[in-house]
Length: 516
Image (cartoon, rainbow, N blue to C red; front, side):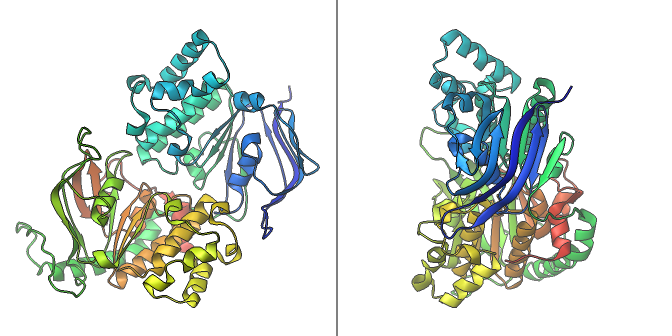
């Protein structure tokens, strides 16, 4: 018996408005009932555009050609959008976005799960039954009455998925849904997608930069643009990382006076005076830092102490909601600890990349974004043009930043921060939304900055990226540091927080291509 076609895309092309950037060109695609289809490809290749073209409410604005049909309903015919009943789309086509917080609209988990059902005018009895079903299936009963603001990123993404599944869709579209999840939460989320596909027969289409994460469940793969082959962790370590680790060990030994390993570590001291700390000396120190967002709220940081050495890349990892982003804000001086202290002689020459790149994007075009700080930071128009080329954004200079893909926005925000020529760079999830080649380019750039004597502090869930660029790694747990170790020692002896044996990031690093 032939399976029903759920998605039928024929000769579909799409270009955004002026400057008329073509994103999809004559794409044809068929996805049948019960498939688990993964869409892969580099940043800006059209993955999000394709997924949004399958959801009427999110259909992108621009020039369309060809046809798109979903569940027997024509969404685009002969290049023109077709009217589709909003109720049909809401109940049959589910959509999960990359940023978990974007889709949360109510104050509690219970209300969030019921929100879509209430909008459809569903009766109370049926609504309660459906909420109970999805809450049990996704294991979120213990926090049904919790405030959505208190949830971790992984919990928010589960709530988003549960709320959509309460509507019982026939098709589930997911746009890099695990990009902001820690490794454990990512594995849990992927396993749940596999169960939905196998046990409920749900058709799944998922865009991702890491198709290997869902390899056990995929029945169909669509590649947009040119992909990157897998590379081995051992090859990266042998060719790229061991020389870097030896250099860092020498610097650390020099800064510590080559003291015997058995001697008790000294209390971290910051150098005094206007000069930058020398490589290996302390450049940033937090001592017994406590922080919370409200006097009645629990502590996010609880007596956390850390010393970051100059000329190094120091990476913080940990689960969703453990306090990593808050710690970065405290280290940057955006938030002041209620107890304890933070000392940073490089504060006047630092730059912060927040988790949401849109927080830095305030101008009307990409070119204007890079020119915004020219007078304040003293760089020239030629530097801006060079940065556009380095990050592959030259063709998008006249576009509005919000018309870029998520990965391109991330590139733009990082380019803007680097133009400020910081001596201390603080980055929150810098590879979020980036394809392996772009992430590898960022890793190489951070290593180059450290080699120049600059200090880099990174918060990330991307363990492959951390493995490739970190000198030291700190594990944040329950508002404190569980450990701080040299990267090689941290990843060698870790049960959970460890990089892949092979990944496309490693392949891109070994390939050696890319900008930044």
